[in-house]
Length: 352
Image 1: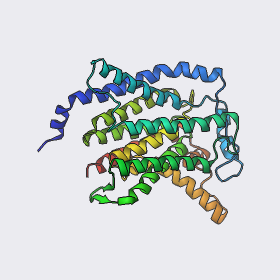
Image 2: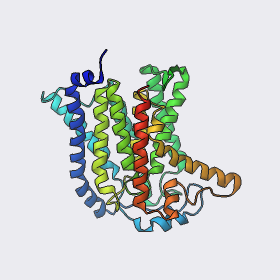
Image 3: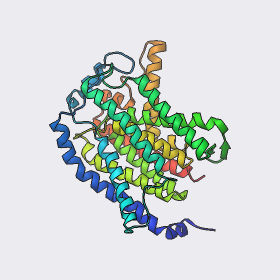
Image 4: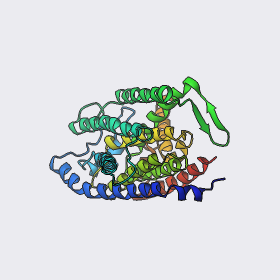
C-alpha cells in the first residue's frame, strides 16, 4: 500500500513546481504592488463609501467607523489575478522553451478556474468602476443584477461540469459519494454564487479577506495535491502567493483595497476549485468565517424585515465587533486565528 511519503517522493518534481509557484507569485505581486498603488493615487482611483446599507437604510454606523478610509485606493485585486496570469504565462513559456516540464495552463485542471478568475474579475471591475463614479443606488452594481449575473455564470459552469466533465455526485465525509444526477447543477450554482458573495461580504476590514483567502487556497492546494491534481495544487499556491503579496500592503493601515474585482473573482474561483476537487462539503468548514459573516447579514436583514429590530449593532459581524469597541486589527487577527483552525479541521475532513 502506497504511503503519503511514497507519494511525495514520487512527485518531488511537482512539489518543486508547487512551492516555486507560491514563491514566484509572492515576489511578483510584492514588486508590482508599489507602482500600481502609485498609479491608483495618480488617477484618484479611490474607494467611495456607500451611502446606504443592504437593507436600504442610511449607512450611518458604517460611515462612522470607516470615514477615514474614504478615497483609499481600490481595485487592488488586479494585482492578484494579474500576477496569476503572469505566472501561468511564464510557466507556459518555460515549458515551450523546454526549460521546465510542467505548465500551469492545463485543460483538465486549471483552464476552468483560470477562466472563472478572469471572467468574474471583469464583473467585479465593472462594479468597482461604478463605485468610483458614484453610479447605482449603492455606488456600484445593484445587488439583484449583480447576483443575477453571477448566477448566470455559475449555471454555465454547472452545465459544463455536468454535461462535459461528467460530474454528477458529491462526496460526503464519513459516508462516501452520493449521486445527485441533474441536482448537481443547482448545487454547483449555489456553491459558486454563495462563495463569491461570502468573500465579498467579508472584505470589509484591512487584511481580513486577504488573509482568510490565502489560508483557504493553501488548504485547497493540499487537498488537490493528495487527490492527484498536482497542477491544480500549484495553481492554488499561485493564487495564495499573489494574495500574500497583496496582503503585504493591505494589512492595517491598508495602502489599497482588493475591491470587488478581487473579492468576487477569488470567491468564485475558490468555489470552482472546491467542485473540481469534489470538496463542496469541506469548503464551508475551511471557509467557515465567510459562512458566519454571510449568515450575520442574512439574520440582520431577516430580523429587521420580520421583527423591525436588529440582532447585531451592524452587519456583517466584523463591523459589529468594531462597534463594540474592538480595534480593527484585533478583529482581523482573531478572525485569522479562527480561519486557520477551521482550515485544519476542513483538511482533516477531506481525508475521510
